[in-house]
Length: 455
Image 1: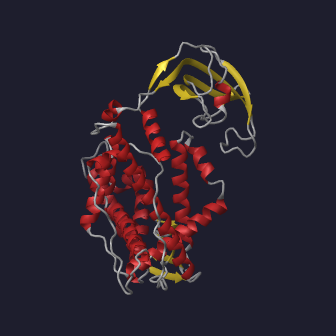
Image 2: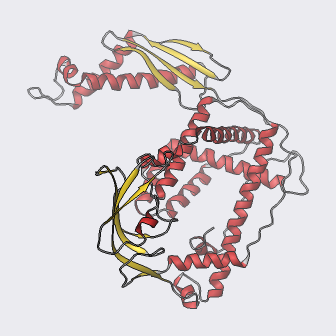
Image 3: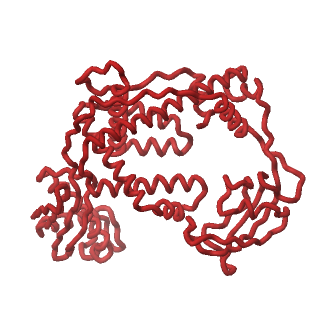
């Protein structure tokens, strides 16, 4: 293996690796010997198929697998021998590959994690927020719970009105051709702009049940869903049934239906505690971000390009997932998530910068997360999940790389919790380390209220 290392910038490295012919031949021989033992060709006993036939039938697949394996193996070897630690997985590009000669040369481009020392952060102070939950907010939370507990009752009316719940189907057409991702089979929707996209609430209003109507609607060129942007489309709409929501009375019987409560007063008190807890968490989150912003301002650091690019991809996926959950098609959601590239890059840079600084503080303060803490967090996540999601989470965290990623997240959480605790302590003593800041559960009634109150 011949290795050449270039330094395009202070943090970026380009490693070119050229493999010796005997290294390639040895790996190809191993791959074909393993294939010979596992494959059976007509006319040959197991393990007796000649190499030339294996190359004819499986050559492309074997060469592709071998090339991928060699790139991974020798990239890792070159990084270890030269004490190079990429901050993000290297981008590997094959420059020359002819396994028949054999000849392989490829490059691995990556950024190093900057070695930084964070200063001037121990004396920072942030105010401790006062959390107040007005009665109106508790009333609103109870009303949302009441609405979720309601039932639908069929209405003997023929014309759809705003606010109705309607069993409806609709699809958009352009030049008599259906537009992708616009068709919805019969489902119950609420005729409201808060719950229906593309102006469908206006189009449904006034429609008579049992009759398919066709209505045109125009969309601006910059409309977020590309399949509709700049078009005048014809919506085919049909409503089958109208329903109204019947809400239960807010009384002691309603409270009993929600769990271990005997009276409405008990449910109300539990929801107040939950709202106060969430408000406290929000206040702490704002305080942590304010504290981190001060530390970032005092400690300018160079952020690797690849780290920012990774955070951009993460932000895109997170935004798209949120839009998908609201009913947007996946491709449209991804496109919408990329509409503000400058803003996206700015957020990604800040997230990457924050992660570097918090990791550096964690190292300086010797913050650690034990395997028991990680196992407890995973157990909580899996227990709170349901159905197939529980199995997927268990499988996900069975892989060491995912446990390592969770450990890193928890280490950052512990670091920031400790920094915030110290910054909000009036009689702070200098030189103290960061410690975990956590609280004990507030009881069964509190846990039950978690799922009932909303922000």
